[in-house]
Length: 333
Ligand SMILES: Nc1ncnc2c1ncn2[C@@H]1O[C@H](COP(=O)(O)OP(=O)(O)OP(=O)(O)O)[C@@H](O)[C@H]1O
Ligand SMILES: [Mg+2]
Figure 1 (cartoon, rainbow, N blue to C red):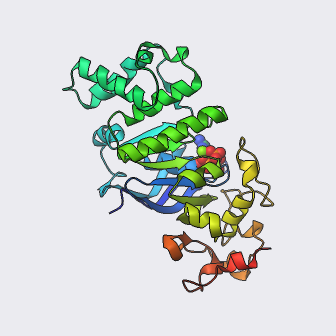
Figure 2: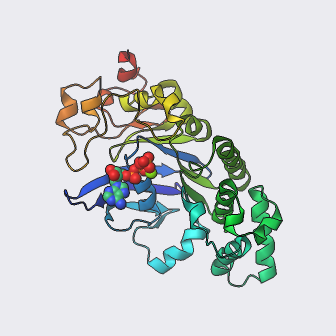
Figure 3: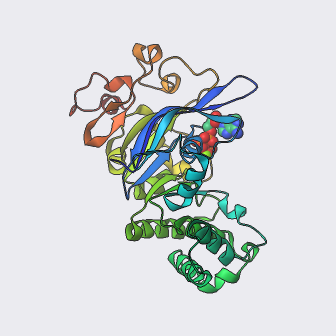
């Protein structure tokens, strides 16, 4: 059994122009101790997927369908109280802006011990404090920082505190949505390196979302590539790097030097993602795809298994037998 199994997840946003599905039938799983990345252009539904899994969706968003199983337990229907207990202890979330959500009038140490004491009320104040000290050590911050207020810390230090907090109850899964994007490159690298080391030491799994595709390819075991609310391809990071199957993944990889900076339009793929209120018929990528055939505008491609444990949703592969050279790659210019 996988640690996390997401099946046919659907999230709908209400909008003045009509409701649209920002996440439309997304399925993937994460194994214990695995780093699973979600990639794709801005607006493709990565954060909405993360919010759907961690039950952070708020209006105008609503869960419109699908199932999330965590260690065999259904999360989607879990009563709120049970989910709150679950939230930090089995699964925690680190968002890009999380460092700004630290309470400005509480010392870092009290915020860390609050998390521990709320979930493990039998813990003595002294034990909670010493656990908070070791948590800071995990993220390479000196213990005396427990007495600091958030404004006395740099952005990088604050984000390290948030990561320490996410580790406080030793969860099995940490969802990280652009955990370092707000920070300078050197600080980002330090924090990401530490997350990977901690993952090896503590064995948690990570759902990792970033615009930095080279970084993602380096640290993730597997990556899911999303396009316009759908999963286009899932594969091992090394396999994607050697031979991505989906034309969209190929375009993203060609474009990646421009992805290392701030959010930018992708140079490698002409055009832009569709309007989700009225997406194109068939494959959503078809209007931008250099390899499109008649079938592509007729029907949506289903996700089909490919070699090396990967899968791809592209008509070019549907008739292909495992082991053949990927059609799209062979046609690549
Ligand atoms: N609060 C909201 N109200 C209406 N639409 C929203 C809202 N938040 C997101 N959306 C829409 O949902 C779609 C998916 O957005 P989402 O934020 O999940 O994308 P993303 O892949 O995380 O993008 P980015 O890389 O920019 O973070 C987009 O079309 C976006 O405009
Ligand atoms: Mg996002």
